Amino acid sequence: MAKTIIVGGFGPGVANAVAEKFGAEGFTVALVGRNAERLAAGVAALEAKGITAAAFTADLGDPAAAKAVVGAVRAKLGAISVLHWNAYSRAAGDLLNADVAAVHSALDVAVTGLLSAVQEALPDLKQAKGAILVTNGGLLFDEPSIHDVSVKYGLMGLALGNAAKHKLVGMLAAKLKADDVYVGEVIVTGTIKGSAFDTGHGNLDGAVVAQKFWDLFMARNETSTKA
Figure 1 (tube, rainbow, N blue to C red):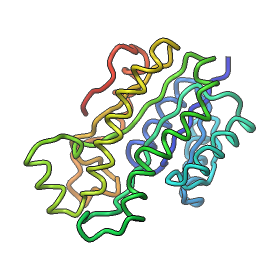
Figure 2 (spheres, one colour; figure 1 turned 45 degrees about the vertical axis):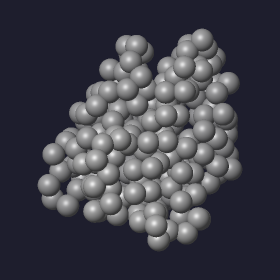
Figure 3 (cartoon, rainbow, N blue to C red; figure 1 turned 180 degrees about the vertical axis):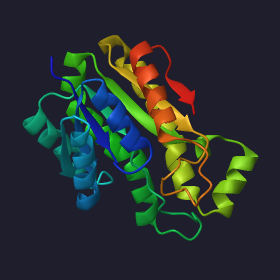
C-alpha cells in the first residue's frame, strides 16, 4: 500500500534527514516550504537515491495555505500517512518591541498552521492509522537559564511558539489516541549541523533526529523525546 509523508518546513538538517529516512523506508515524500529552489534541489537529491518525491510551495505560517497544500499533496500523491511539521519562525525575537503581527506570525507557524494542516489531513491519518510528527526545540522548557538564552539571542517569539507547540502535541496525542493516530515530537536540544542555526559549531547530526522520529513512529508509545 502506498504511503505518503508530508515534510513541512523543508530545509537542510532535520527535515532533509527525515525525508531521506522515511523515503528509504518506502514512503513517497512531499516536500513543503517557501523556497521553490530549495524544494527542487531537495526533490532531485531524493530522486537520485531512488526515492519518489514532489515539491509543493507554501507558507505554512498561513493557515489557509497550510490547509490548501495538504489538499494539493493528496491530489497529486494520494492519501497522507504521516505529517511531519518542521516549520518554525524567528519572528518577535524581542516580545517587548514586537508588533502584534510579528507575535501572530510566530504562533501561526508553531500552532495555527500546524493545526490547520492536521485538520485537513485528519481523515487520511485516521484511515491509515498514521502519525503526526513534530520537530520542537529546547527553548520550550520553563527554566530560568532557557529564558535567559531566549532573551539574549532574540529568540523570545520562537521560545513562546515552541512552548505552545509542545502543549498542542500533548493535547493532540490525548485526543487522537482513540483513533489510533500517533502524535509525537522530538525536542532538539543541540544545534543541527548545516541548519540555519549552525554557525560552524553544530553538534548534532540531522540523521540522529530522523532516527529518533522513526523510532517514535514505529514504537508509538511515547509522545515526546529529546535529541
